[in-house]
Length: 355
Image (cartoon, rainbow, N blue to C red; front, side):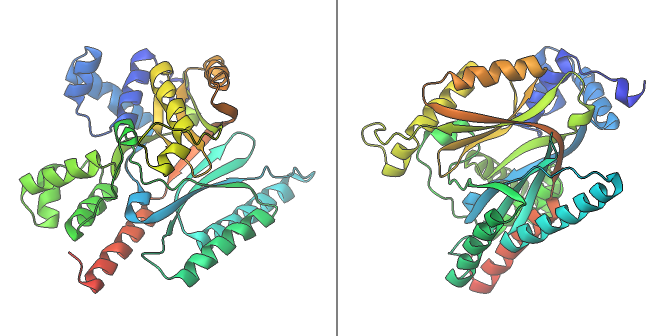
């Protein structure tokens, strides 16, 4: 069968949804959830990998918990030129300019190509406790500079100390103190998200029991989640799309909540409804709340009609002011940048004598 002719069926879509939520799930656990055998699940997953539908397994790091700010940069649509070759050269030069600006801002964690020749970049910048205020000032200046160019439509500061899991969103969370060994484990997981406990323990020179305890701690604290990157162009029977959901401000909150959580009260209400009322749409990654009460969501839908249905349902929420929809055409995960940043933190800890 030609790769382009393969259409995802209902079971494939459920498998992708489960792996997007936790790519370290075993074939047996997925099979149990879907009432299928382990070998049946393995065959389907291997087929989707060989076709290129599943591009790679990833360990997605919550850099906000590593004392970083995380930005989402959305580029402007490029103006069309009459000469096709000139347009191609212009696109290449334009992308080079964008990358140059972004690299001044921080490290590119991920890049998403969107229908309409728009790109969305996820960037991590070091916060004040890691670098001095002069450099932080330069970061803010570069953000302003970006917005003043003809390249960028909007910049969203999505830094949140809340974890990836919804259960972590629900409770007040302290920023975890990560040890040198914790960071070494994270580095192993980024390089090989499927690494086994025994291999991980051997690489870091700790016991398997300690490695397993640290892995569970990192997951429970929302520092890391395991997912997959899919190729939207090969996902026949599936559409990958993102939403920016602008939430009405509300400072009432619930009695006893910290002030910063009161400011996000409506965002949490919208999140609750998303998890409760849109179960048929698997999340590509867990929704994030920005500083400006914008919820960033990446999800799978069966077709444009499913997208339209979810979009209208979200707009009907009384807490929602407006929403913007982006259809993804390509996703790239910048593993090398993530490893480089973890190495920087490891070196900083070593030089300061921290554990």
